Image (cartoon, rainbow, N blue to C red; front, side):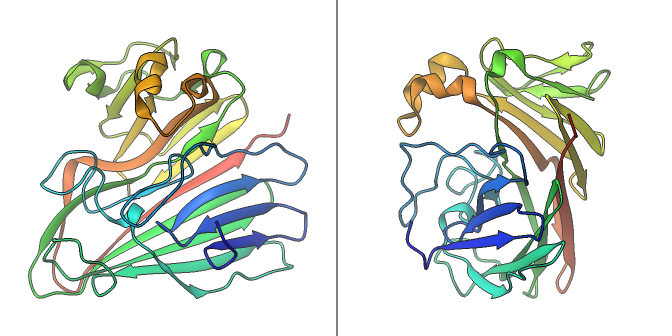
Length: 272
């Protein structure tokens, strides 16, 4: 990507993050003294109308195929604009991005304005998403911050915090199950929508993920078979990533004219 597409945030402690204007998509987060925390596919190349595999795509106004639009909607394939920032040199760096209905030809008839605020601090990063209804009629939407986390080997990783919750098992056709396990493990494909998810979960090793506003959490890894069929990711990279997504899926948001919905995902690295 060229310099006109990528916005870089820095903090005084040496932490760095990068956000692409294509999709308003976080592509990199490297806390000071730590490894890269975000996975992006080395073989995926974004283009108009095409998303980049990895990072933290913004899914709006539709999650997956749950609606009439293209998969995950149009926000992740549209060019956003930088509104303010990034602030540099302080303990916290912040940048604000915007996408509205005048900037896209989506086939979606509802006027809207999306605002994404990225905040980078010592050992943490926050993604704040705001959805405003700028029209005269209510609309419904589903969506997510579809964050891809980098892992050394997903077969050694786990997600904790969902025990006792119900989830839609998308890998099994959407059947609803109860999770009796203390951890979600990844020996193959996992595609779950946890309904009424907790505000905080842990990605082992050493990451804490907090969300507000989003009622659900999606946990996804394609496994070896689906990864080989994706076409925009090396087949072996299914072992190098796992998605833990702040989502609103089970109950679509009903947004009245003039109203704004807000959601947030915060990622923290736990000290070794």
